Amino acid sequence: MKLRPLPTALLLLSLSAGLALHAVETDTTGAAPKTKRAPTAKPPKSKKHSTKSTTHKTTTSVHTAHVSLNTREIITDRINHSLASTRVGIENPRALRPFFTQLHQLQTDPHSQLVRVIQFGDSHTAADMFTGRMRSLVQQRFGNGGAGFTFAGHPFAGYRILGTSRGQSSGWIDEGVHFTRIVNTELGLGGVANTSTRSGDEVTLDAPCSLFKVEYLDQPDGGSFSVSEDGRVLSRISTDSPVAPQTFESPCTASSAENTIHHFELVTDSVRPVRLFGTVTERPGVTYEALGLNGAEAALILRWDQPIFTSYLKQRDPSLIVLAYGTNEAGNHNWTYESYSDLIARVVDTLHATVPEAAILIIGPPDRSLRAGRRRSAHWQTFDATVHISDAQRDVCRTHGCAFWDWRARMGGLGSMNKWAAEGLAQPDHTHFTSAGYIQLADRFYSDILAAYDAWKQQHPAPAAAPSQSPN
Image 1 (cartoon, one colour):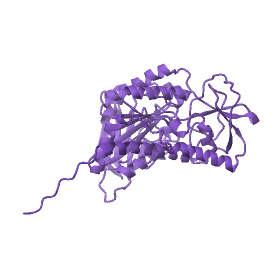
Image 2 (cartoon, rainbow, N blue to C red; image 1 turned 45 degrees about the horizontal axis):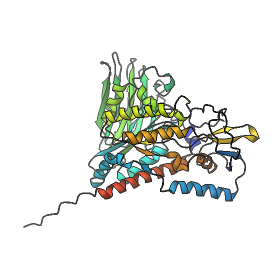
Image 3 (cartoon, rainbow, N blue to C red; image 1 turned 30 degrees about the vertical axis):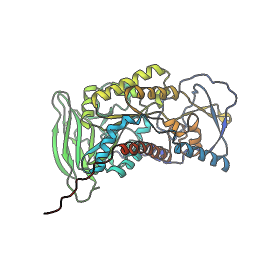
Image 4 (cartoon, rainbow, N blue to C red; image 1 turned 90 degrees about the horizontal axis):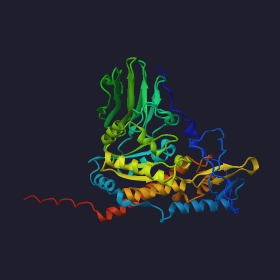
C-alpha cells in the first residue's frame, strides 16, 4: 500500500533565509492606530499572507529597503546582546526542583531512570524546530531517551519529530487538528487521534528505542489491528470493548548498536473503527516530547476528554511540563488579562492535580509584528497585545508554583521581531522563525535552564561514592 510522504513544504520554507533585509525606523508620530483583531498565527506559507489587521499601540515600523552593512551590524549586535543578557533567565527557578533532582540522579547513574519532558504548545512547538533543538541539547548532556510520545503517522501538514521518520496510508481520518470544530473529544495525550474504518490502512514509524508502545482507544464494536517490528508481528489487538484508553507495549529487539533504527507497522485488518492516539519509543535518558498544534491556545487542553488525557499524562509521568502558548491568545480579542489569568490557572491546577510530582514551566509568547499599509507605504507594526498575555502567565507562575521564561524579553523586548526578521531569523509573516532563529532561541532557553540547574546543583552536590574496602 502506498504511504503518504511526510509533507515538506513547511520544512523547506522554515529552512529558507526568511525575508529580505529591512531598515529599522522608530515611529515618532506618537499616534496610536485603531485596535483591530490580529489574525490567528498559522504556519508560514509560500503565498502572501492576508494582512488586513493592525492592533493596539505601534512602537516600531519597518519599511522595505536596502539595509546598509553598518545597520545590519547594529541589528546583529542588538540581537546578540539580548540573547546574552544575564538580566533575562528562568524566573522562579525553585519551581523546577523536582526536575533538577531527577536530572541530578540521572547524571549520577546514567542508566538509572528515564526523565521525561513534555512541551504542549502552538505552531512554535508543532514544527519541532525549537523542541527538536532542545531534544538534541538535553540528550547530549544527560542521555538519549528517544523520541518519547509522538502522534501516530503525520496528522497534519509539516508534522515531524527529529530523529524519527513516519508515514500513513490515505484512509486515516485525522481528528483534533482542526480544533475549532472538534466533535469527538476522545483524543489522546496531545489532543489528536487517527481513525480508520478500512482494512489494510497502515501507520509506520522508524525510530531507535528499547521500549515501544501504542496508545489507542477501546470502544464497542471497535476493529482490530496488528503491530509488527522489523517485519515480525508482535501482536494482533482487538479494540472491541467498553470505552477506555489502552496501551500496548513491547521491548524493542535487542541490538548491539545503541542507535539501531527499528521499523514499526500498525495495520488495520477489519472495516470496524480503529482509533490510534500515538506511539512511544524510549530508553533510559531524557526525552523532550513536542505536542504542538498549529493555531492552538492553552484552553484547548481543557476541551479534551479529561479521563483519557489525565490517564495518559499519569502514565507518561513527566518530570517537567512546558506550556508554550500565547501567540494565538494575543490575537484573540476575547482574552483580557483577568480572563486569561483564570484560564492559565485552571490549566496549571489540572496539571498539578494529575501529576503533582512534575515541575511546570511556562514560556511566554514571542514578539510579533503585523503588516500595515499598502504597497510602497507598507510597514510592520509591533503587535503589543502579547504584553497582557505574558503578564498573566508570569503572575500565575508566581502564585501557582511554576517557572517562567520570557521569550519576548529574550528576543530583545517589544519591537524586536522586526530586527529578527531583518536578520533572516524570522519568517516573512513576522510571527514565526526560521530554522536558524528557532535554534538560537532554543540554545538560549537551554542555557538559561542549565544555569538554573547548575546553581541548584551547587547546593545539592552528588553523594560521595562509598569507599572501597581493602582485602584482608
